[in-house]
Image (tube, helix red, strand yellow):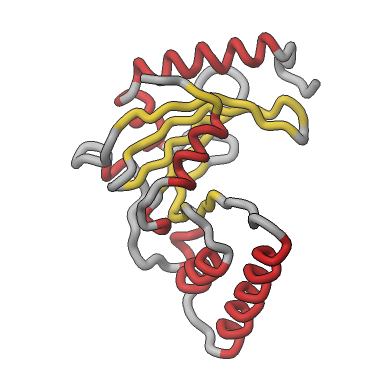
Length: 191
């Protein structure tokens, strides 16, 4: 297992040659210490664990690693399912996206035009919120998006189960993140 900066893990996610809407995520506060835990999974790209914290309001720091090469039968029920969802389910679950910035001004203009057209089409012919989200992510060329179970001030049960499943990796990531917090001299406040 190779522990790396959390942004390197997100680069792996964005560069994975997989269906972008196949990603799923579970996140919440860390069990012990400052920050958040996040698991990202895709059937063809594996499962990644990230631990992050806000060094200050503008800088997020963290570590991560790949904890599984695929989603097996044991892991599948721990990640949100890729099903057509009702709006009430989305209130509980939510969505996430990992974005890549436009490469240049021309690319940005092209993305903006596609986004504008997508919004116009959906305004004229109402569709489901799930279809709208998927079309917006396609217009923005998002390399990774999907359903997410997230608790801002807690931990979903699935997050606890994933943490237990990958206990050794979680312990190593927690130690590295705690070292970052100590090195940054942040403690429980912003620097």
